[in-house]
Length: 614
Image 1 (tube, one colour):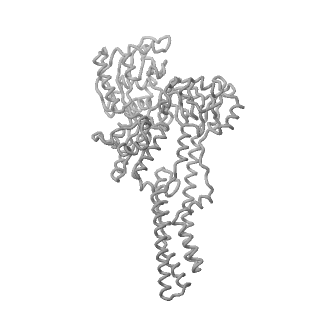
Image 2 (cartoon, one colour; image 1 turned 120 degrees about the vertical axis):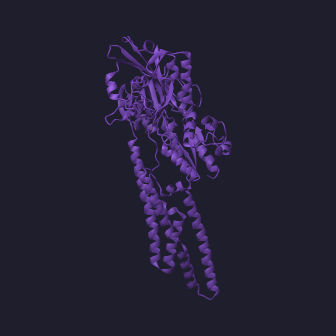
Image 3 (tube, one colour; image 1 turned 180 degrees about the vertical axis):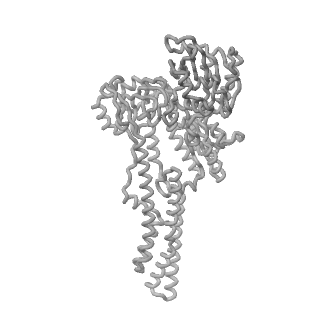
């Protein structure tokens, strides 16, 4: 058995056979135990925590600290003046204790976060469905997934029913990705394009699926990122480098001055023991023993300030690097943006409107996108479901739409769930007069094919070719602004169909309008980028999302200026693969946005900037 498969290039059954598993029964308990022993637990390998003693000793590896310890020893041995030696050692020990405390606190907090992030998984073993801890999963396990689940390992899909997975944490894509089981012929497809795979630490937002585990622990895509981080070259901070240089320079100067003083004293007839004592005392007095203490206190204050802002700083010197930053390389989704889809434009009654405008709560478009929607509202009023759908409900609620009242008035009696082939969702609701309302939402190009009429201003008229062209033009215009566009439609039927199928319901629809949404930029991010720019720092966006979306957000944030030719091109991961490291280094200063990239690309970009001395 081998787990080193390009599982997305093979039929699901071929992957199942390679992993010696069975769809109906899964693995046996004995085989699962054997594989757990072979592959280890399904968790990321954390660097072993050093002991408190090791952390304490680590604090003494700073050059300035070493000089202070030597000075204390020399001072005590040469002059037997223990006061100076004790004071110097006290400063050094307090400095070390503060560093140890900070690192221990940060490790404690990180461990607590890891513990919170360990989900359960539903698997088939010995023919039964059972719940196991995710760290007990092994390659070959058959896993059941549904909306709300955290994907516990990398898996090849076997069955997928209207499955959507939010992969922003891994790929940076701002909207959930439609998944299906079809084979991908392309060799080396990027993570974001592997539609028949689901990856560890991503979230199922819609639908259900059956999948087989192909990789666990450090063999997953998330594990690959962890490996790269663990193998990253450790470098000193600018402050540490400056302190080392200062320490070495002071040491040389002090030794030279002490030697000159010693020689001059001898030439003037002084005794060797006397001049030795004078030279050593001069050397000890010249060493700035207060410098490490002052820098530690300042860094501690910075660390506490970061903690107040919910940021963990593991080691004291790390906080100083913020002050030495020249280039800020940032992800997009959830960092520069809210990671929350928001409606910005709405097209209805033949006119494009900003989402901030008021509207009629009986608008057919509003009714269609709210009813053909699986969003749920929990006891605290939070919206739960697919981000695209929750954006529509949030839009309606913000306008004062009486959601609970309307859902009670229009109970759902039938539905055709969304699937990636039709790209539509339809629900059926009884009306007071005995007829039924059919509400449909989905991709504009697919929905328009099924519409014969339009409802503009409450008047239902035929949908002409000119109308279709005008609607598609508005759709294209919003798409060029990187908005995700969905359409709404409806119709009234006299009786329920025998079967709730597309052929029975999704035809002769009345077009109601379009909504355009995006994961909007954080206002505080735009302000921060402007402040950083004023301070001489440049912001570069590196995201796994699509190029059009990345460019639109970059322009809105001020990372790209659409009126300038330079810094305007968005480089994709495919383009990065086509050039050498030397070519990237030559071009890196002209690029501000990278899209559809993988973790390896991020490392290349960082190294290219560092090659420029940044």
